[in-house]
Image (cartoon, rainbow, N blue to C red):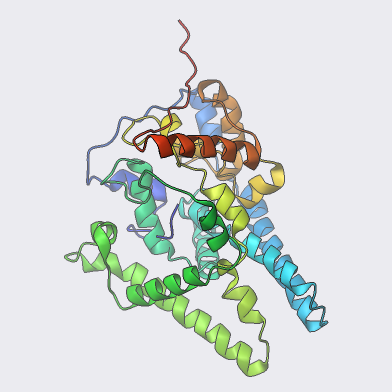
Length: 353
């Protein structure tokens, strides 16, 4: 789930857009069979449950921001760094909220999905227009290059990557700023961007260009107002928060496809599910149920736990917790050090005779 979202008009959900994408033949994906009534119940969207997830997450974000601002105002300088780190840890999961709201499945009411997608994308420095265009193809052609270049195997995660991006990430801030300025100027580069936004279809480029300009203008306004009023910490908690404290997000989000197989028509072989405690599951917008999410992409995130319980008999063994899942990944990467062509094949349940 990289920082790239949407070719279709804003009234379309990601699933609706994906159905219209005919750039390559559809892949005959395997999906665990479920009763029709159960599938219907799983796909039900709820404004109440959507609000509990979205407003709950934003409430935690606001609470950690307010705690850091209060520590600075009361000159509790020893408390300020850990509170800022905590705020950055929460902010890092903003992309997961943008991802879910971009699917159009969190709220039953469509404009609520769009409104909160825009809000979280602004706070997270995310071009949701570009992300959804990329992500629609990622869902349809998961790990089938060149039709999916959002995730390309092999993925190699090193300890230095964790320390480089998990605490202070100035390089990430600079790269994000440069890319946002580039897109705001209408410049698209690289094979993936040129696939998503062909030069001969300028109308497709307008939404990400417009949003990039909103990001730059909005965060510039925050900086100007804050510094003119002497509120020096406000840009730190609003504009810079996506670029520090991301270690927990790093450990959660990088589990999704690493070490698994590409060019297979079975989400159980190219996506990874693991279980988490309820607090982390909430912060991560339930994306630890990643096989389930790809298998039934229109199921709201708050129903993925139920979907997991219904189909876990048909899934590979699921590690419990971050320590267990990273032990599994470390073993796969050690095997890949010896054999670079190795891709892990999770054991699948045998079919009843």
